[in-house]
Image: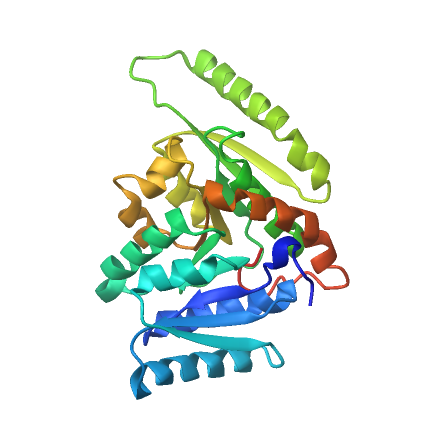
Length: 297
């Protein structure tokens, strides 16, 4: 097993009795295998045949997906959010699923709560098809503020032999602007952003980077660009436009509508993201790039 600094080796996945939870288990098992980590499956419920059956089904899915993977289970009497936050306190990654329209309100609430409070990055797995060669999309308001999300995006792209697509949204002009002036401002913004990305391009020289500057609301721009992505990476620093898009007043709608899996990086988890960047090259040494897999980082 590839040990992480600080001993954070587990990938934790929260489950209930739904199909989307089992899909998240398969995703998490693949991620754990890629990391050389163990998988911990957590269910919040009282003791008895029902909750234990939920865990047993999840273990079966994990072992079918990744034979030989070390799998453990936890049955917690706590509320789902508290159970997941407790499990995430010593984890490398927390994974939850996002299902259909019937349970979206509840799942969105749990996903939102754990995403903004967990001590590690949180992945919200979607059930739809994933473009195998799509980029990792990261919404950037400021490079400094969104640094953890950028690191996650670059780590994922390097492990997949893929690319990173950086999206920045400029304010829509409220008064008429000459096309030439607008174009010049876009070019200036893009060039500035490219320069600020130099620490990542230097650390990840094998990862191609695409930088786009658009004129749209951040949430709208993210959802439109995510259609062809493998993964949407966002931070939750709280003040940036993209953080507000996902975790402000429109957060539930964005989580529901995202066509791809979302990885959320809270500032609390930033130190573990840095550790991931330091160890990702070693963890993937000798592995082929899994282009046919679901999104991993």
